[in-house]
Length: 200
Image (cartoon, one colour):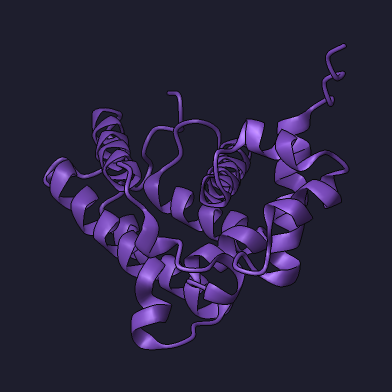
């Protein structure tokens, strides 16, 4: 007789893993401890995630989606770029897992930034360029700015922030928030006063 399915198994696993990562750090977390915390069998974890590293990537993906949803709920789907950056600061600093990811806290997430091998940074870059182009079409952003060049500069800044603590030494959440706030102030200089409201 087949075992009954565990309701919301994937989310239960991710919830348990996130608690363990924040309590003990990624390197100290094991699949067995995740299974125990989630109240399911170890094999059930492996049915959802092929490896511990895949589990970490799913945690970070879920955290990024939480941030995106919070920003969208606060600002709508088409905010000004500077508003988006400022809302991102609030969402980021309100999420312990994602704050740890940006502060490159190896005690929490291990060497996650160095392990990224997919195209997430290119997707972010292309999304930012499209965001700027849409703002330009609405008349909410200077058309004198090359959208792709600005998106490249902003993406490089984001990638740099992900590895800043490793290269420059420990950073605080306040320093991280301040750096993103500077980016918001910089892009605000390209936004037009009295621009149409989002969706206009």
